[in-house]
Length: 269
Image (cartoon, rainbow, N blue to C red; front, side, top):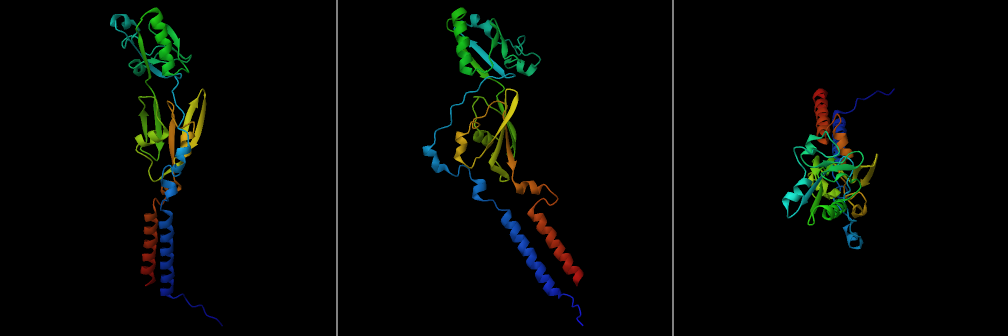
């Protein structure tokens, strides 16, 4: 008749120790980042044969705030065309006191209410196009030496996720995805560099694009340059997502395992 022999304590402890070391090795390897995950523009050798990103020029949209400055050698003649900060407000839009201090709000019809000239349709035009149009009208009827400068005041992009999240004011109305990410503090080691989500409103619809910063193909992407009010989101890695769970890090998991091992030895004596 066979009898059951309890397992040798030292054999159990040896097996448990090996298991802990094996688990520790797996966790250590899985916690390491690879070059493919971290390095930007890994195929840079392709750049000499690649065309530069297409020129980008921002277009004026509904709810934009635009600043229109008119200057002339005769300041008195140019004065009626200047924005009166006390009375003009955000021409054509109304109700926005912050916008009233900076420029004209483009209303739902795509117009702004400009001094003397009245309502002007501006939606879909670039700065240069509107500057040329206003310069031509003013020189023909009012100021022979009129100089017009237009700027989109509220050109902002939002950067979120595994970066130093921020809302960026773009003074020159031209910013690329790499620039926006750099200005927000770069992507952390817990961010996916190959999965940058850009969300954009086009007319009344939302569109999106996934960009890969590890490849130079990003320079050919139509979303490479950002438009006003675009949202850039850097997705966290699987490791980062898991760290938000009950066990927040591999160090915590090792601590739990070693504590269990210590209790096993203590109560086995």
